[in-house]
Length: 167
Image 1 (tube, rainbow, N blue to C red):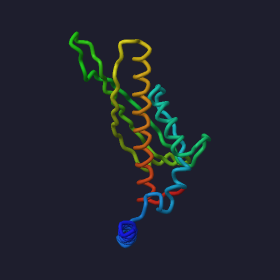
Image 2: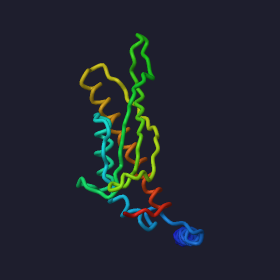
Image 3: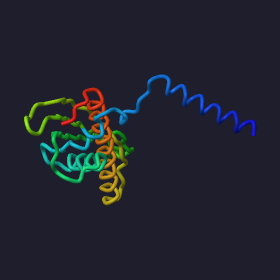
């Protein structure tokens, strides 16, 4: 009983200390959610990795239509590097690195609001069986695309929180 009371008091004090420090969640800022809903994602060069990033980003933004007041242009480049080598000098582990270059602009005026680039990495094992190797590679691509989509969503949310841009 005493332990339960102490725990409840600890949680209450932690909650009060967070409210007193001025902490505001990122999605609590005015214009963040509306800004994210108005982003149209456009892939510059068609590739499997680029398609996966766009698909995951649209899912995260909750977008299922193609129009938007803002346009997010994406270019996705990927490279695979062998990282683990067996005794017979055949790679058994790969690192997939995706470089994402993005540019957020106003769809009507084409005025660039922000642009940047970043990298994400995922590793996967290469199996002896061909199908298992392909499945592992595709899983690595999916995970890297998910990381890239997370990074893009957070960067856009931070932009909207700082600049309050709502079209």
